[in-house]
Structures are given as C-alpha cells and as structure tokens.
Length: 101
Image (cartoon, rainbow, N blue to C red):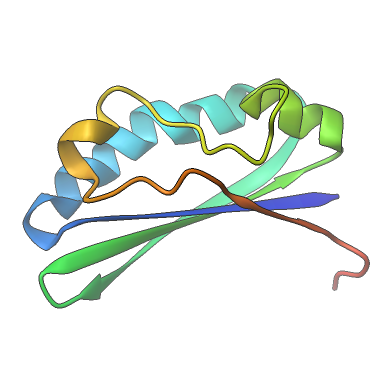
C-alpha cells in the first residue's frame, strides 16, 4: 500500500468554504479513483491561518498514477484552489506501508 500526503494553507476566515471545495473536488476524485483505499481530510488552526492535511491510501503505484498522472510526486490542484490557498506546494510525499495494525 502507498500513502500519499498533501498540505495546504488558507486564511482561517475562508477555511469552512475551502473545506467544502475539498469535499467537492479532491475527496470526490479520490473516492472515484479505482485503487483508492481511503482518505483522511484533516484541518487545524494556526492563528489566522488554517492548515489542511490530506492522507490517502492507495493499493499500488498504478492506482496513485491513475489519480495523479504519470508524475505522481506532483501535487494535484483544482481551479478553485487559487481562490483559497495562500501558496501551493509543488510536490507531495509518498510512503510505502510495510506494517499496519
């Protein structure tokens, strides 16, 4: 199994709106991609900013590529993200799961 992580920051005042955007875009695409084994969309406040952290699980590298394309280390963004994100990280992190409980 492959774990993929992404993070982004919004202004706290826009966090609830961005949460809805993430539900409509990223979460829907994750769920709709064959080989996705689940995802956690999380958030936490940092003063006037809100951090969103996404953890997704994939059955294989092929499944990750089905979601992210041929360069899976490149972050996937949607047009709406430009309105909310304070900056965009170009890459994401991947981890191969070797044990779980």
